[in-house]
Length: 183
Image (tube, rainbow, N blue to C red; front, side, top):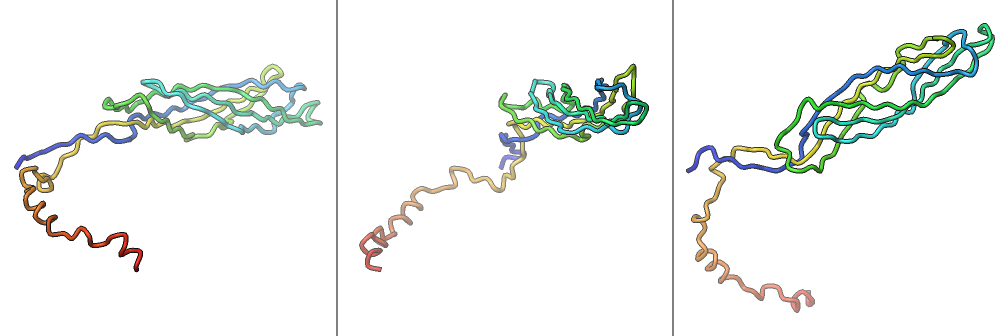
């Protein structure tokens, strides 16, 4: 018997992985000169991914809503700005056995875009936003597995004459269409 018999199996698996943490500063221009920042939050995060050999590009947009006071803190208003971003997530884990360029990309936000700080600078509002993405590239790859040689059947072990003699003893008229109709 052959020892250490291996087989190569082609299967879908995660063949690339990476994550990236980013911070961005965005300038929001209000209609009035702000006195104080009362709140700032990020909503409506939407993104799409594009696969490149050594990285995944995450492109998206989100809305920055800033609630501020003006006119010496006597009035308030909310200003909204939609901003776009682009994060190149390098693949720190890559499988060199990928058999096809047809891959799927799974992307999830480990840290949804979140406002860390909002401050007034020269009559404008500067919002500092953080975000973090995890990407996984799923594709066809080769996996080598060891086969239990006790489970292998060699072609010489099968005797065609024994099989033919067993089949000769079968009654081919066992269930005909006529008998099915009479039942």
